[in-house]
Image (cartoon, rainbow, N blue to C red):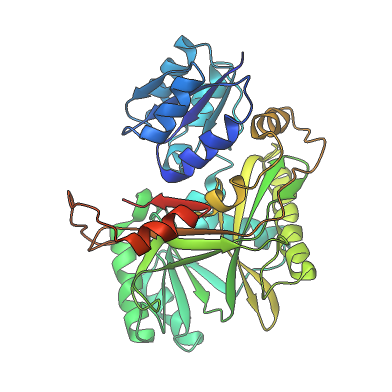
Length: 381
């Protein structure tokens, strides 16, 4: 039986574990920073093992993997990839179906991603500038009439981007926020990215990449803003849905094809720049605007919550897909059930700021009935 290692412990990783364990031949080993009972149960049933440790320590993860004769690994969260966990496993001769630190730079360095697409003429980018100088950043904001998105270059858990008209009142607040970011240096990166504000509908496209081709999953729309009516701050995700036809009510097949083409050109650009294949999950956050499909940003792993939508209806063998990815040859496009999905998060009061902890969960009969009817539900605690 193959020994498979999953690194991570969130609801997204639980969805990955469930999908992998549909293959009865797989033994699931999990390296987690905190116990996820669902993952632990799947590991036990498959005769694997779990360990609790520092998932951001390449040495610690690699040591666990080597001691358990892992044949294939999947480091999942963004910060784990940025820490170089995939690289450490590969150095021990353990194949990884997740990007290396260099490849995942498409996510952990937004400046790098925009420059790559610009340099290799990949379509879909908005007007943007990369700045490490406060005055130059302010001048660029003025040149766009104050209608901008201000982004840290580094990782922020989906909570660092602020847009005028939403989290920022106007160009004055955008300048203030850009100055704040430049002083903080997120993830040790000195630059920030400022982009023209895009108007339209956002959607997520996740894809498997074997370095030569990207294979798209059903489209998902994620709702990030907290509180009823989307009036609160950005979060990592409050819920999401997908449609039975793999599209979305506002997206045509032509729009999906345009987004997938941008992703395909991006992995080709990465190979041209580095001489290396992009292996793993590539997930594009896109917006359908009046001037076409625009790329908001890339993630180099499954989305959370989008993974739960897509993987709950995946009918192909996920472990088999991972095997083919590391062999740089996905032979058949993965298949999905023609079903719609809904994922809704329950979060603590105060989220995404300072959450109130150790509070009881109480449901009335009506709520319990709705939960029993849900296809996908996770607790975002």
